[in-house]
Length: 56
Image 1: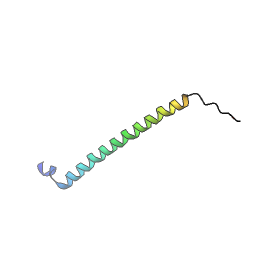
Image 2: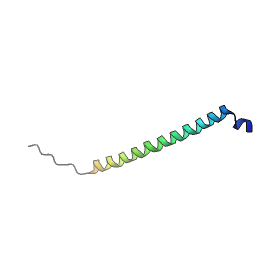
Image 3: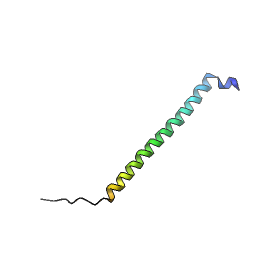
Image 4: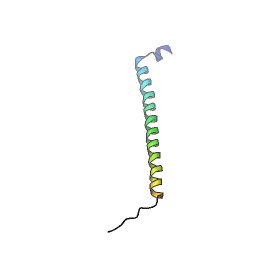
């Protein structure tokens, strides 16, 4: 078992797998956070009273 853990190739791919999972989780969080903020702002904009426009 110790030889598998210290095998450079297994160590490299283990780090790559965990790094890619971490990267994906970070992107998922950031996109979700930005999307949530935009939905809140869009809801506020759509529920606000329309501004009166003058045609003169």
